[in-house]
Length: 61
Image (cartoon, rainbow, N blue to C red; front, side, top):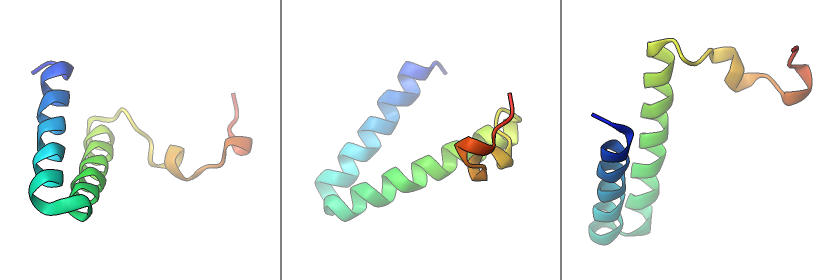
């Protein structure tokens, strides 16, 4: 599945949540989607957990 289709599905899910559940449901779906995205990237090996918790000043090039 390409990224355009995944983006469309995510947008539709957020739209349905916002329409039927209100703004609170929209924020909940968006937050859980972001968490799911980060977990998926971590499990694929594309994301190091330390990257999320290090400050910008402590990065070494």
